[in-house]
Image (cartoon, rainbow, N blue to C red; front, side, top):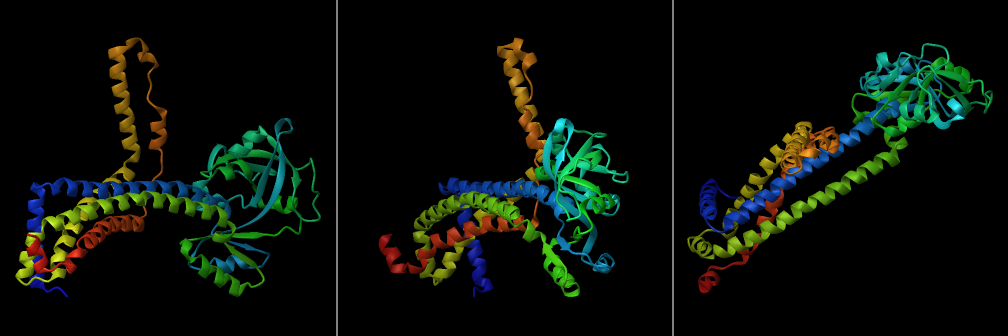
Length: 427
């Protein structure tokens, strides 16, 4: 262990070395190393936050509108009232579901999933109401044979609010006709979500209409949403122990392929950006190796005065840590600032570039000034969602500091093998 007195002179020497290096040729190398860590931390924070924003938009729409955290299949009296008492549960909804081939205007056809749900679901399920944006009409299933469909599905079928669609082919029990041109439903609303598959292949009818159209043998499903998605396994075990006759599935099971693809995409992007830290580590390693070589005379003096090699090595490790902190902390601040102010940043860039273009067009070709307009891509970039995850931000910042610390440790490792006589002979 390094005593307090040893630590004091190590810190003193490390500060003196840093002051001298600021005026020497090593200053540029140290500055570039800190800049590399700063850019790496900033880029990782921004990229992962944007990736989280995109992914969570999809995940929120899927969880709140269609999948739920847990689905329980089977009919059981008193299930809802019994399960609602669990503190982990936020809401529970019962519904029927079937696949259908819809026919709209001019015999346009489209395959979809029809879900029969409580007409007042938006009142007691705030997540559903938040993610299901009604673009036309209203989420009104109280009228007889009313239906609410996705925006892309409505476009495929050529219908709008007030139009009619026919559930021409419908999966269901044996007491329901597979094909029928009598299952007419009036469109009362058109919705849009952040997940395209829901917009193009989902529709909602009332649970009473579902019981009538899907047949007596239709299997009821209970969709359960939790306050914390990490409690899925524990809640599933509780439900299964009380109702062993029911089939219980979690969101990780019936969305395995989609969420697996999102996780692989994020990991690969993270791996590619982490190469920035690898390049920075190599740069710091080479800079520290040269610094150790330049400090051979000082190292020999310290050794002759009785300093241990590991204490001398700690001087250079502290310098590497300082380099990492000088890069990681500004990178953390810049990354968070970009994530929080992303819309303003891209809007400002759009205005600046438009002003520059406007200046040169007025200067060189003023007749074309009426045809000049701002790049619409910047407006698209300004709407990029960013969701900051504190654990990831802390991990990235620590990794930036640790990469510099690790490179300094390897670069100064040769000090442990260096003898005083060897250094003095070289000098």
